[in-house]
Amino acid sequence: MFSDNSLLPKETIRLAALGILSEGPLAYADLANAVRQFVGRIAGPSLELTGPSIEMLRYEALVEPVNDDKDPPLALTAEGRTELLTLLQATVRPPMTDMSKLVIALKMRFLPLLSADERRDQVDLLIDACELELARLSDLSDPTSDDPYFQDWLTHDISLVDSRLAWLHAFHDRV
Image (cartoon, helix red, strand yellow):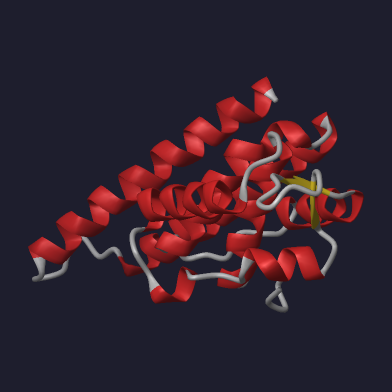
């Protein structure tokens, strides 16, 4: 993890793999495909997000084969579940990049794995990240600027963050 307790790209992929396995055992190829599909659809293709080998998860005893078949399904171990919960509780690093959006999507997908208090804490972290993003964008905004296109874009981006922030506040009350 970074010093601010946010996830490195390889840890984001680890979160995806462990979270998917928390839903039930999968064959190695199916797990790799599910991770690739989810990550690719949220963040797009990226060399930064190639992530660790699933074999590394086996080596670290975070996943294990369910049986002795030639290509057995993999399941989450107790250590894997502990690691998953630790990764789920990481912070989100502003500004909102594709990586941040991927982390948020993974948190939302696997949020039910956390206790009610932990879920609210995670939504609070997301609210804080949005507030920092809003402050950063607002600092750039200058209505008197001679650059109307950039200011229009900033106004649009600020509106998106405002909308996300309002949604997160309403969501906080539901979790």
